[in-house]
Image (tube, rainbow, N blue to C red; front, side, top):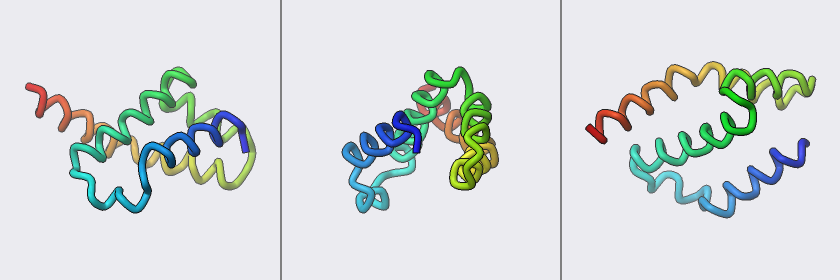
Length: 88
């Protein structure tokens, strides 16, 4: 596994007890996910840049990860819209 990805996963696991995710509000979960998307975008230039990177690795797990990200883009857009609505 790519060292950078391993590092990010370990950092996320330290920051968030995975068992506590069910206790997060929708807004808290959105913030957590959007924060990770921001980090991914900063590293790869865009969400689709990250998807391309994961696919380029040629490993089934990363292909599945790329598919998940790509298929979740409409959900990410909804999260962003909710965040902007709450801030307005």
